[in-house]
Image (cartoon, rainbow, N blue to C red):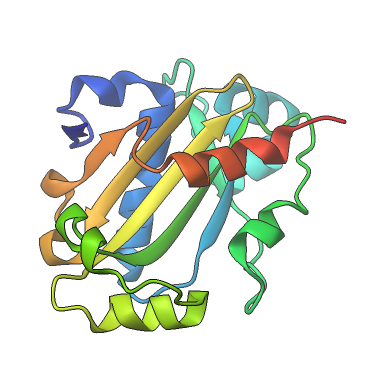
Length: 187
């Protein structure tokens, strides 16, 4: 796990890390209390070649040198009320999509609070218990996966809402990465 700042962190030279940080920065600009957002990740050079109109619309300047870069393209709004895992299970990406990313806000507790979680709570009761817990923290998670299995995540705490405080790492949110990876599964 490392603190990440675009342009200063050596990990930001990785195209997937750059894409995750770009999405995190975009989501940060929208503020907190936002719905989950899904993004297709496409190879920038391929996008310029195969979809020049879309590339121009996205402001992807052909003169700009970008080797091995990924362009995030936000998808339609996710359906409200549907559990995220169930919705992700319905997605199938076209071949032109190299990867995908999701940004979602959640409340989390520190590991020290795990032992105090009451047993037998259903999902709604557990969510209320966490929301009422004095040590809860709000977090925005941006998780991305590529077809080849590469993963990256960025975590931003609401209490430390600064680009310099964003944590990055491939294994920060493994369950969500697994769910995103499953959207590329072939039968």
